[in-house]
Image (cartoon, rainbow, N blue to C red; front, side):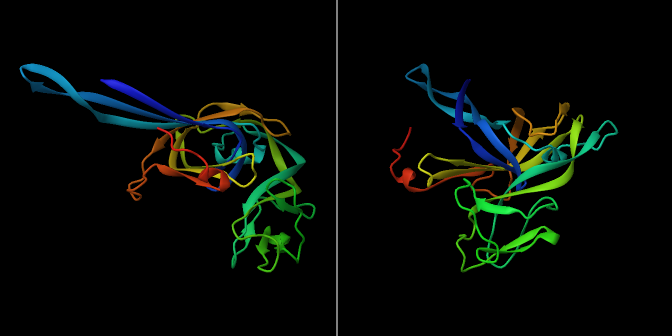
Length: 252
C-alpha cells in the first residue's frame, strides 16, 4: 500500500460559498490524497509488483479567510439563543457580476448611494451611463452601451445598518454543504484562475467571536464530495484565463 499526496496552494483569492461572497482568503490549499495498492504477478517463479492500482481518493480544502463581514457568518449560524447582536452602521463591500437582460442584487439595503467600481478599485463606473439602478429593491442592471463588460467582476461599496454579532454559534454536530468558488488573480492583472468545487462539506461546530469590524484569519476546513450529475468532473474543475497561461510550461 502506498499513499500519494498532491496539493494546490494559492495566494490571495476571492471566496464564494453558494455564490455568496465571503471575503478574501490567504493560503487556500486543495489536497488530493490517493491510496494505491500494489498488484503482484508471478513471473519466472518470482512475485513482482507490476503496477499500483488506485484504491481510494480523497479531496480536502483548507481556507483562511482574512476578511469576513459579521453578516456573512449568517451562512453558518445555527440560530441558537446564545447569539447576541449590537446594531451598527457599517461599510459593506460586495463583489458582483452583471449580465445583460437581468439585474443583480446587493446583499443589504444601502443607507447611502453605492459606489460601483472595478474589482481592483481602479475604475469608478457612472450610474445611468454604465449601469441603471433600483437601490430601493437592492438591484442594479447592466447598460449594454456602457463601460462594463458582461460578467465582469465589480466591487460595490456602501453603508448599511445591520447587526454585528458578538458571538456566533455554529451548527453543532452537523455540517454545511456548499459550492465553493475561488478566484485567484495573477500580478499581470489579466490572468486569473477559477477553482470550483461543486460540493464541499464544511465543518460547522464551535463558536466564533466577532466584532464590529471584519474578522481576521478565520479557518475553514472542508471535505470535497462528488456530484454524480457531473460525471466528467464530479468534484469540480480548475480553469485558467489570460495571457500568462499561454506561457506556462507543462508540469509533471
